[in-house]
Length: 253
Image (cartoon, rainbow, N blue to C red; front, side, top):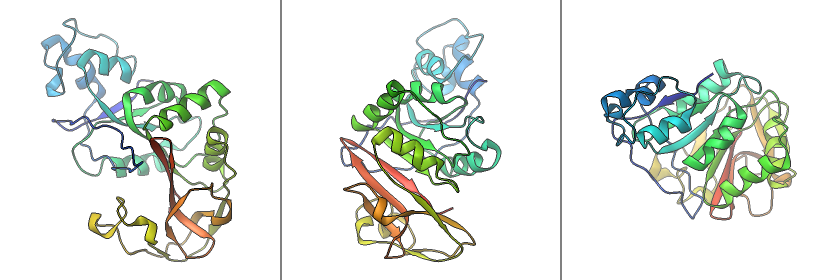
């Protein structure tokens, strides 16, 4: 299946931050067909300068769209239904990605396609997984190197630790998820100066939910910064720099 694409009418390419800071993408949906196949009119639907004049009869993937219409991809979202519930958990995450306007987001319907698309993206999102994508060392290394070279990877946390296992295999970590019925999550000092600080509109405390999957503070990798936590061992949002890029893990759900 072809990926779906969302975009604003004036996407602004951005470079990956060397401070591993995540700027959450804000997008307005546009169909893949409009973006991919409008090169017949040499307009690319207002999303870039068309590099080819023949109409693209088959939209085989986001990379084809980008090559044809010279569109920069700001965030690559994994939406492979072999590994996650795309109708609920994936859709919820994508809704957050599409909350505003300004950047270009692409949803990839296969994990291999998503990995290939990382080289064209500034950021990537892994929603709550139902199954761990068991990748070979070459693919794990490709994700690691993309982050190390400046990419920002944002991952949810899940009930059974599949997201943790996925990241552990890529980065050599030993993180572990836990869960809690209820509880509040105050913002921690490390959030100052990030997109989670007060100046960026983030709440002082994440409110009480019926059920929260979080990470064990004692199992976080060395150098991790805790952004929201109960102040003890329960960490709902954390990040870590990896080379020139970084990883965010969001357990609050």
